[in-house]
Length: 610
Image (cartoon, rainbow, N blue to C red; front, side, top):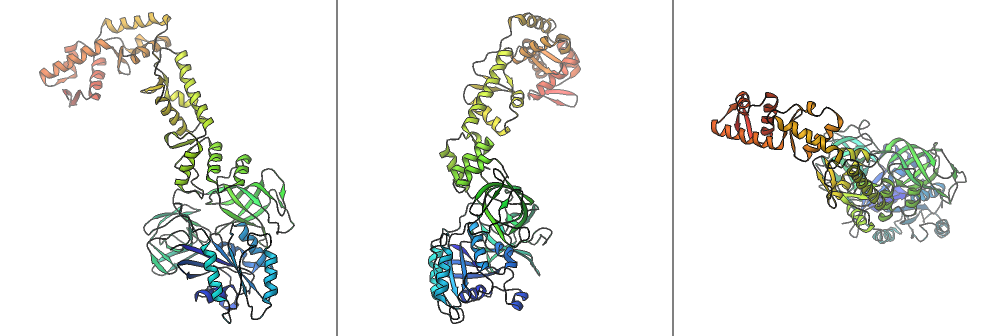
């Protein structure tokens, strides 16, 4: 069964709550003060099943003093049920609610013309139709009803069924978020929070993260409309039991229950627009406002990128700098209200949840924030290289959609990275040039040290450098220990350094089992370079920091040691030193070297063959 959410909208006293009760049998006004005043103050909830459609209804307050509560209820809805009374007509809160819903991207609505038994239904219906002209709701159905007499209620149910059936079911993109609209404690149960689940599924036993605040918790149980369930899906009214969390300290209305991979942001890159129906006051650069996002409400400063202000009917790129962090996705819609909270001033779409002020990126995305190919291309262009596993993670696109877009885009994708083609080509050429320069400047070296290569490319993400190195080694380059070189490179000493090499060979061969210490035979930089070359080429064996043997001497010592141990079973360092006529300075590192090769092993103060 598909799950959908409907929210009421309209002016105070136009009969929203009475209509919800007539449709569902549930009175959404749950607070004693609401009963006493006959007015909806906070959000109310009910359930409606129509011809295989499971619908959660959110009843919102219509009084202008409670618009902040109204916005908290309409952030994740599929259809708006506007209520306009025939004895009153189109009123200020009807208009403000229409603008709010338009800002939030709601494009399906049904208009219930209530109180037709006491008002001029025909006249008000014409008025509603005139008010809807040139709006997204221009063709929405208008259904005359009377809750008192029951007239039109069945027509309204049929109309709701037809209109909800036109709505795309809420998508499961593997990214669950529940914006908390109620938080309370139940005796013997603990903390319970409710909201409309979007973007993914949740199950009992799963670990979740509550933002802002990074509070972690485990779901003990789940309910939907009072019924225990083992799975909640997008579009379901959901109650989550999180007993270890404290209301206020850990969780409250405005917080988001999500999964640990999503992070908060203190700034958002956005496109802002002022409705052509809004007031004449301009929204100026650096203005203060309240951001309403999901059920979250936070103070924000508006910083325009390329303009000083926007007026009604205009839009512009901006950055919102927030007093506290939010969990936002690319494509999320929001509303701005003035600091006094008396009127709605603008709405918009999140273009970059990381708060970028890159005007080109934001400008391109503003044209189509719901197009995955465009968003992917601009993300890779801005960041150069992005792990595909995290690419557009905080967006309304699934991981499968992102990977498919990577395949279509033609971006390089080595080692699970999405890399802009120009960036990839440039990085590969830079790395190859650095290696070639090392071959040219130091032909005696086997290659460029990887540490040096990474240092030279430190302006690029380490993941990209790793991918470049791997790709080079898949083609014309080879990695040997800690160096990288062209496959065609052959180390060679410059002619002028050959005499030094000959001198070193002589020193190592004069007393092969007890040659001079490293610092004695290579006292200056040039000699040290030549010695390193001989070691890399295998002509000399470095058995310890200060102990170097010629290749021939190492092989002979190894053979002699093995023969002695085969004959005697074990031997002390002193016995082996005497047998080979060596010194402790050489024999100890030699044995440790053979230990590391698993040829010998130490037992007490003796060595045996391993």
